[in-house]
Image (cartoon, rainbow over all chains, first blue to last red; front, side, top):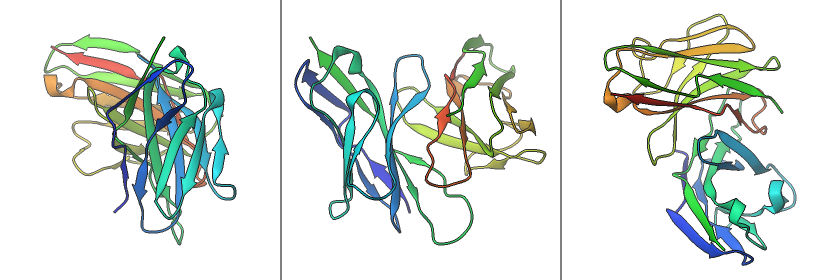
Length: 117
Length: 115
C-alpha cells in the first residue's frame, strides 16, 4: 500500500536560516511526488513536483526538493526562510502504475513550519 | 492551472441539518474530487465526482451521508447530510487532469462547524 510519512509535526527555524521539511514515501512502483502548502483559511497550493529527470526540483517561492530514490525521500528545502513561509506543508505521492486507470494522491500528515523573526 | 471557486467559505450549522457545498472550475477538467480535512489532520479523500454518473466513494464514506453531483465538466456539489459535530471539518474540492504526472488544484475550502 502507498503511504507518505512526514516525521515532524512542526519545524521551527529562524528567518534567514535554511529550512528542511522531511518526507519519506512507500509505493509499490516508481512515484510521482508533490509538495503543497496551506496557509490559514486557504486551500492547498501546489509548490513543486518530481516526475523524472534531475533529482533536484525547483518550485514556487524559492522552494526546492530533492528526490532520493535509495532513501525513498523527497525533502523540501529553502536556502533562506521568510516569516511569510510559515504555513502547513503537505507531501503527496502517486504511484505511476503499470497499466491504465487512475491512481489517487496520498497525502502525508502535514508539517507546520514556523519561521521566527 | 485551474481556478476553483468553492462556496460557502465557511458555515455554522445545526446538527441534523444538511449543507451543500459548491465547486466551480474555470475550465473543463476530467477529474474532480472531494476531500475532508479534520482539525489538525491531513486530507482524506471522500469521493471522485464523476460527470453524469454516480460518484465513486472511498472506504468509510457513503452516498447517503455525502451525496455528490457533477452535472457537467466544470461544476460539482457535495452535500453533508444529517450533520453531527463530528462532521466539523474543512471540505476541499480538487481537480486534476487524467494524466498521473499532473498536480492537483484545490479550492479554498469550506470550513464547516456543526453545533
